[in-house]
Length: 483
Image (cartoon, rainbow, N blue to C red; front, side):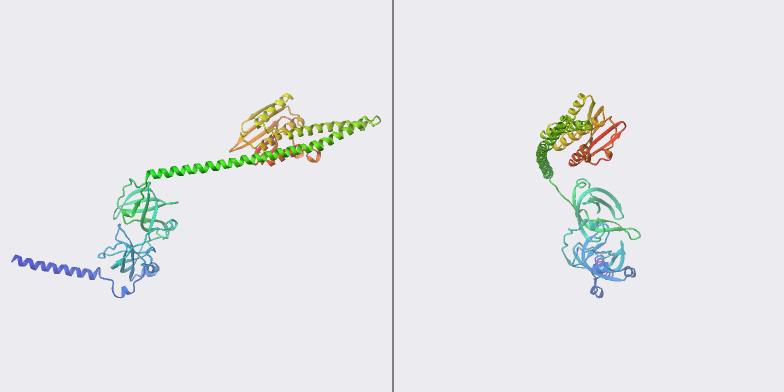
């Protein structure tokens, strides 16, 4: 009795189970057939629907390839079958709809909804047509991801894990990574917990769905990447010894290139300075020969003529007085030309450093009864020979003018550095004030100031004259002189 009742109960239970399956298939997971399947849209078509069409709703059927299945909720993304790399439409499956897998070619039917500001499908039915192979999610532009142009696409990003934190969501714990890319840090969200050991500071490749965040008024805020799970993050292994060797080789390579480059520049500079020095020496000797063979000889002849006039007995007294003055001027001019010839035939002080040349001027001034001293703090150790000679001649001319024309009793030489490699040299004297704008120039036979300016100009130096309290000064400096 009990056995028969058990058999009847088993049969009733079995019939109930069969009826439940049939009812479930009819109501929840029935196949997408009929007119809905014939009018299936591409995910592109759904994404193009206007706001009024989405608000109006209605049932649609969508055919495409599943590119992402969320582990946070039940949603999945369906992309165009002919181009799974294209943006997909979000599918929100209702209860009873099976969970697909990545690569499934599916046909879903349901109502149009709005999700995260975009059209989505609230799926009531789904058919898996066949399995496909998803293409690699690579080759995306980081800038496009950052601007939100890759929304609802399955992409891969490669960078360095800069930060890691855990947060609780409605579906459980999640891990948020800060992935340092080329020029900004991307937000990566992973369902579940990830241990930070061996991850932070390492290079990683993550593959997931590009999502956008919007403000309430629809303004785009930022983009983030959602992974389906920890398996979608690939931490790149690296050989410590190999990395160290690469770093060492890079440092050595850079060092060798730098050393060769600096050596070549110094060699070229040395060759150029030698050529310039040789050209200056040759020009000085030519000028010395011209002065000796022309001007000095003419001055000597003029002096003889003036002396001959003085020897005549019946020459008027005013003529004799003029001739005496003339002979004095000619003798002084001849002495100055001879001094210039000797200076040009020599090395122009090029064998002396600038410090030594200034020291020699100080000694000569003191012997002449002029108080002189030097305070040199900024003369560069290395200076082209031509520049050193011209600076020495400028200083010598400044001293001559101060003593001869300014009646100076005190001369002070100063030198100060101008970072990074410049200098400023001054000759100060307590003589009469000097107005460079009203000084005698070449038109009156005075070439001192013009010569100083020309020497400064050809060495790209600034030269200026001025008054500082009771001191009159001449300044030579590198760069532009704003005084």
